[in-house]
Structures are given as structure tokens and as C-alpha cells.
Length: 90
Image 1: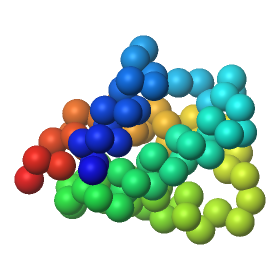
Image 2 (image 1 turned 180 degrees about the horizontal axis):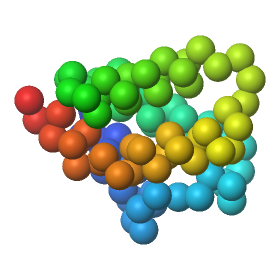
Image 3 (image 1 turned 120 degrees about the vertical axis):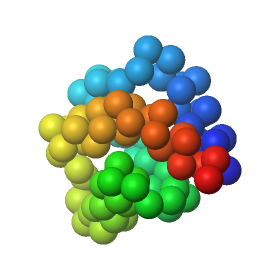
């Protein structure tokens, strides 16, 4: 399932890190769900531990995540996609 999530993210954003500033609220919500899915399914490493913190932040958010914070989250995920993907193979 995690491999599917990584594949879907790469297909949806083939040029890499998307700018959340230009995404609709629906697209941001979709992206948040995909990142939460990644966070729930990976094994531990420093990157994965950070991803899990991000997943917890997104899960516990009581209001919309500010665009600046969401951009940092999205950038982190896309910059570490190879390591996240490799965690699925363990």
C-alpha cells in the first residue's frame, strides 16, 4: 500500500515538490491524507520518525495547516521520497 502511495504522489506531481500556495483546499486535503498514509506505514529511521511527527501533526490539526507549514511538510516528503520508498521494502 505504501508503494502505491509513493507511486500516486509521483504520478500526481511528476515535477517534484508542488507549491501548496497554488493548490486548492481539496488538493491540499488530498495531499495531507497521502502524507498521513505514508507516515502510518513506514518503518523507523530519522526521516521516517520525522514523517511520523508530521503525520501526527496533520492528524491532530484542529484547523487548516498554514500554507508556509504545509509547504515545509510537502518539501520534506518530496525531498526524502527515495528513503521513504525504501522503507517500504524492509
